[in-house]
Image (cartoon, rainbow, N blue to C red; front, side, top):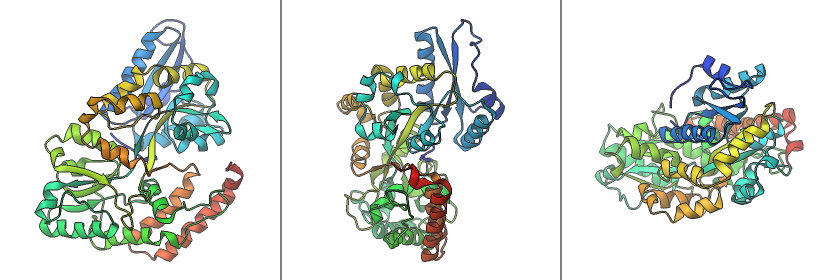
Length: 440
């Protein structure tokens, strides 16, 4: 997402000047010693996520005296601007978090350094092949994965379902059923917004990747990235968003970003689409509301549970191509993610089993852990990953063209015209960026 995707989600906020001046340093740490300082930018995630990153960095620094990692937490809405400014000024951080879809693109654009040789082969061999592939470009690895999660699930209020005469044990399985349920929820309680889902072009660009593939059986660009493919196969998806808006199932203005569970926790929604990242904040911040929430697979166009509805989103850590300390930064990444099990395992227990591990050995261990009962939606979450696809790795402009077209249709615009405009934008992007030459 990414997303952005995911993305994306909710320890302290750093100012722009603090973030910029803290990055790219190669001077010895002020705390003493003659070791190397490695700067690390981390996206601002949930409190539980942020706590793990801080502890992992602190523990790494204490584990040896040659490298000091300086962690800076950057809010998601400021991330792109700050990173681009730092890279342009030559002050980019040595290492930073990024979602899966960003890794191949940044590797191809020479923004990431290959780190294969700095992480033991056993660390690479332990990765699920899907996620090893996600960080590999032309035989080299450019980041190491931390976790993955499904990007789209259906959250719904069981108490409101009962009030509206709906069966909470039989949630909507088709888009038509979801709209019908929304109408009943609206009729039963006019103070409730029936449903919330991504609405703006940026969020639609990445949150619908799974639905795009599940509906059409392909993405909006050909597999060899040589031509646009926003075909009529996508018409039902466009009609779905248009109907949601036109029939008042979703609000005229979204109550919160796609990644934010707050409106559901506050009792403002009957149903919500969101990634599994919403589970942690829901359980932690809204303990009184959580018992009334159930989670199910997202409905599909025809109810076929084998259709893809989600991507396997998640985050990795990579090293900037211009870093003077690639080996040292990769060493820190290896210690935190790729070596022993205790440090990465603490991430999954700390986030209450609301994420999934890309390391096979840790995933097998966690699946047998009785502590996973802390997440009452664990089985639904893991089941959703079985039909999910990896995030696409083509340039973001392709995704944005599709998201922009979906937003126009959602607002009532002509669907055929929106799809033709998306095709034109994708075709221009292919030519401008030479995408067909980048696909291997």
